[in-house]
Length: 320
Ligand SMILES: [Zn+2]
Image 1: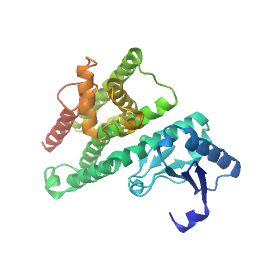
Image 2 (image 1 turned 60 degrees about the vertical axis):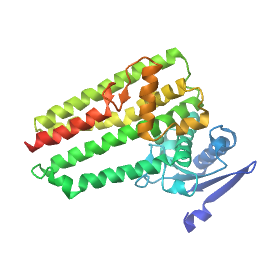
Image 3 (image 1 turned 90 degrees about the vertical axis):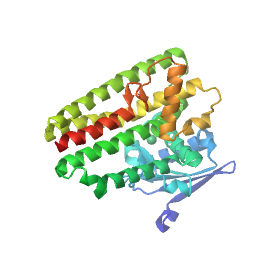
């Protein structure tokens, strides 16, 4: 917290729990007061918020810092969470589309991320995983592998590889945070019919994603950079949306079948990405009797291992 922040801080105490709100915007008072009122209500009464003894909420009008786990309306910064429970809201996005329920849903989603970090350091670990992958992809020994491929292709293939990792890890932390927010909004129920509806929706989504991946592959194999980029842009958009909805279904399935799990643990829910998917695929096969939507084995609609193997094959293809 910088010196400037000290003057912009409001501190509230609710039964010994402490809420700090730091306004870093020039938003007009009327809108600001509305935001303050909802945050206070949320902090004092919401059952997810009450899992936290203290929280700092930053009201921002600038873009999230690098490394943030971000949505359009709000974000958390894994590094910052090592010292205190904090979330950031995008004031302009919230005010531009003001809806109390949606705003509270956003706050719950972000508190879900805070719990994930506090309970298992899953967000920081994921940041580190991302950095490791970046380092591997830019290593000269790895680059030698494709010394006769043009820079544009390398950039594209590198981005694809990074997004595949983002998708597979976001399934766990965005999926669980989204489920938590839906439970809070009472938008979701636990029964066979809901499970089936969510399965079908995820089945459709994953088939769209697989189809778009095929389109990317075809264009890479044809060595048509322009078309490959276009198809990849479409796939990237899908990845960003489906990580939340498919991830939510995965988290839902684990919660649906695991009798011992509690609300607090939904945020955590084995948020080590691979453990989370392994857990999901086992539950889906054993108790749901269905083909897993995503898996790490050679089963299910989308196998992460298979897709990585296909990605590696594309590089071989480009070398020819
Ligand atoms: Zn999120």
